[in-house]
Length: 132
Image (cartoon, rainbow, N blue to C red; front, top):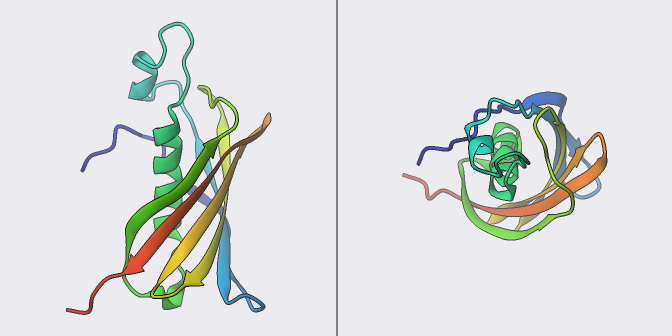
C-alpha cells in the first residue's frame, strides 16, 4: 500500500522505558510542507492536512520507535482517533508516543500538537507477528 504523505517523522526524543508501567515513550517531529500532494484537493484555497494523513504520520513514528522487546509487530487496529484542530501547510507536528503492553500485543497512544495546541489523539493496537 502506498501513502500519498511525503512527510517523514524525525526523532526528537529517543525511546525510553517507563520502569513503573513496563511501557515505552518517544517523541517525533514532522514538518508538513506546502508541497504535500494532498493539499491540491483538500481543500482548494483552504488547504488542510487530512486526518487520515495525520494518522499516517503517527503510524510511521510508532513503527520507527517500537519497544525493543516487542518483536515483530503488525498494526491490528485503530482503537480511536480524535481530531481537535486543523493541520495546515507549514505546521510542525509534535508527536508524543506512549507504548504499553496489552495481552499478546502492544497499544500505542499518541498525542499530536502543532504550535497552536493539540491537534489530535490517536490510539493504535499492534499484535505480535507469528513466529515463522
